[in-house]
Length: 444
Image (cartoon, rainbow, N blue to C red; front, side):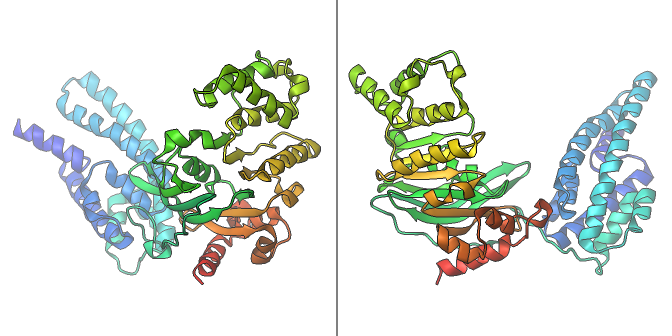
């Protein structure tokens, strides 16, 4: 019994119970212990079955492959234990075959991770010969040899705290104040920063463009502002905290997502009437709701098509209806995610002109659009988000359109996006430089 328990423990922690397996397992664990110290990992992770493979991949900056290694090893662990416990020859052969199949896939991904490790340590690829011969020895050698030092260290949250500092802005009595310290998400075994250090004031009557490359955090920022996905932030609208007064303030914020969820079999009037019952305060009478529906249809030019089915509307009409639904509550803050998506230049401009007129009534309009230059004259300010070296969304600029052109030394908004996009995304890769430049401007 004791012998079987010993074999099980060896199979779990050292990947085998024979003398050679135990020696190689100890060699591998020792190598990880030294390697993790070099790379900024916590060394106790070298003793955790399966998880150590994921931690090893982080040292190589190959986290996605590490996730696969972790899952493969989670499948292989019970197989190793079962091969010790089961005595049937038929079952043993079956488990061995399955284990070997997992092992082949594991080896492929392990080699890919090790290649990444060699790149991080600036080691030559001949080390792969050692890996293919006996990988525990390879890990042990790169772990103990001082000549191999990582180019990039990691931490639990994979961020360099000294690059971040709060620059909170004072709260506007009228308008939107955003003081966002961080928006994080749990990503596999660690926290990941999605957004950091975003502080701004937006005054009533402003129409603001939200600009940034793919993955910069534009939608994440909007969700944080409206309270849909709360961040470590203080979001104040007309002096009231959006997060702590969410139910009371839900009528003051309108959000139009990129995709609408309207029923095609309903008429325009029925769609707006049903929306009014949900979005307007309960103390509104039926007559007051109908009056508001008529008013919104007039604003967005939908009165002539009020009896038309949603499925029969043109693309521009459908977009205006989608916006009208959110505008029923007469929000103070109106946010739109690509409202001009799928529209031609003429219809897109007409739609943006309507939003400009709404902003001129003292509302705050924030818009994401991927074709900003055709309507840029309608905006007052621009927010530019960029991904820093840690792939965290940061504020690279906030201010007027004209000053943005000067700050980035670019004539168009599309050129600005190209400037901050990373080189592998077809950009100029200047995000970190410009984020730092804007931080310095803020702190002058």
